[in-house]
Length: 478
Image 1 (cartoon, one colour):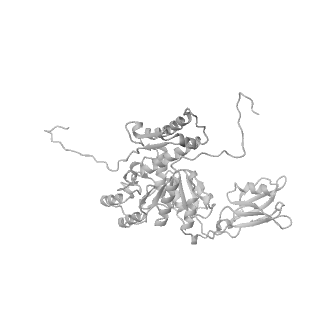
Image 2 (cartoon, one colour):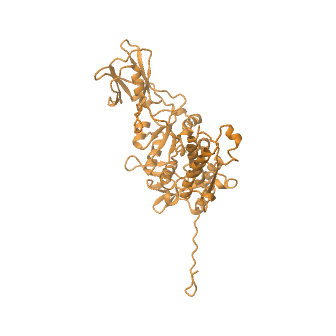
Image 3 (cartoon, one colour):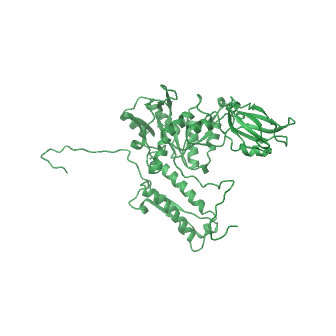
């Protein structure tokens, strides 16, 4: 029992549950990879993480290259969901006890032949019991446990392994010391991946993971775009769509038209040429990782409503566009048709469009791509604040209701201060209503606490005009 007054620090065996994330710069990515779990996204912070958690670069997928470009352009956090075929199988091996019964079943972390190259050896404990050692195909130790006593010890340890998971076998005895045994039977069935498996991978990004951008790098089909836009709308995110790697404006405009209208995404073209992983070679990479990276970098400084375009959309890693540059007339046609262009600007490259997929005729207030991103951030903040008031006592004097409204107002004030909400004063830019017309006696009696928020999102300057007049020397400069 702690003595009062005083302080105490408690060390726990499990972390406290985290609140709802509100980092709008996170990139959610679905794609094919050699390794990693399925149905559970992995967090990747650099290409080293991509190597160790996803199995490295492979010829059949653009995922690794997309992540590489994302980090090189300033992105910091990607959450990756792996796509596998319907008949994907997990590699496995049985570890026997001293009577040849199965003590432990060792499975690969996820399906795929990658884990067929993993071996598991049972070693004697240093002082007692046994140890497990995970090895690569050449017998090099990747992980080694401390001394284990029971089978359950191995099961618990394996929950933190980067390669395997252990489950109890039929025997109740620990495994016997034995030479390394390879896992076998792993297969990712990637040749049979369908829209269903892509949707399953997207669904692994549950709403509680927070806001951000979502992409399937290199995916240009209408089915994939529809899945991304639907996911974004349902989960408080925005979709970054890769259009076909084509120089034809009509092809790109037709692709966007086929995707229909959506407030919750934006489409970009063309693809970009970057240095290859081998000196003297190049790679062609879709635009979504570059846009996601610039968003992450700009959000961290200016907030989510500031376009990652123009001087804030300068790309440093590409050395060419995959297509010839479009002239100003074509760029105007593409921009009007909701195709956001990446263009060469001098000897560099810039994101030079910031329009969403919204209907410009019937939904003009959502055309600026900054609008859905600001709303996304406000929704995330509101969820976080609202969670603090779940089970709060609704007192008759209104203290809880007032506190709730003040907390939401404080969050919106930040957006106004950053210039992301439009108005001469804060009251012109947003309003938070928690008054008696919102929190009525009936709604309070139903144990409900409510708020109504209205905001005016700031526009961006898509066209900047300067008029220059050459005044005769006998005239007057106004």
